[in-house]
Image 1 (cartoon, rainbow, N blue to C red):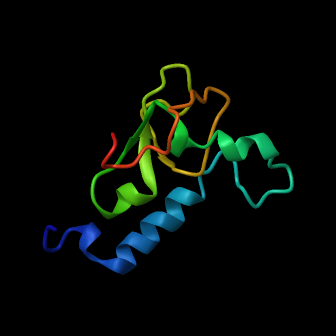
Image 2 (cartoon, rainbow, N blue to C red):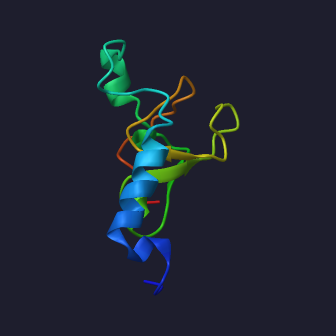
Length: 95
């Protein structure tokens, strides 16, 4: 890990998580969350590219040209209408 890098500080990682998770498209705690969305989360999409390092356990980039989130960092438990099943949860080791 890089000394002085934001990823070397647990407090900085927590702040990043708070900011990024606030931008979710689908919040699993929302009363409007549909049951079928549990099986259509970003981490299960074939267009999901997990980030490296500690952030890669929860965050990745969408690479689906049809998604409004193409090229944006997303929370693994988020999702969108352009979901395309990868057949398994995509992890940094499997990507």
